[in-house]
Length: 144
Image 1 (cartoon, rainbow, N blue to C red):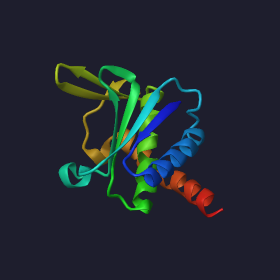
Image 2 (cartoon, rainbow, N blue to C red):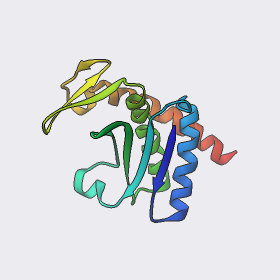
Image 3 (spheres, one colour):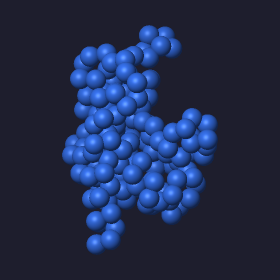
Image 4 (cartoon, helix red, strand yellow):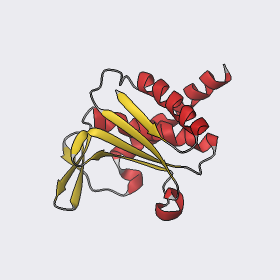
């Protein structure tokens, strides 16, 4: 998987790039033809109550875009990035899809449309379940 990180802070960009590289390996995405763009954006938490979000570019579903709130602490950044990278894997492998009819989006999981509240969405359950394991691997690498 090819990726790029867009971030004003060079130190933050290097940190995110390092973690993305590790997570691509951990999630077995090295051979994926998808392209990931990670953007650090101010105000996600304040505006949308989200630490991060992932989705395919509607014009090119092989291009996956991740937004991360730029005000996250390093600990929150690790956990959020791990969670969002699970969503990257879901989109890259076609497990999760968003289909559009005009401006209306329908979320699909494993080929079936899903309408569920946030905590009951199968892609979120998967991401929450895997986030802590991935974060512990990142912390292990950081601490040696």
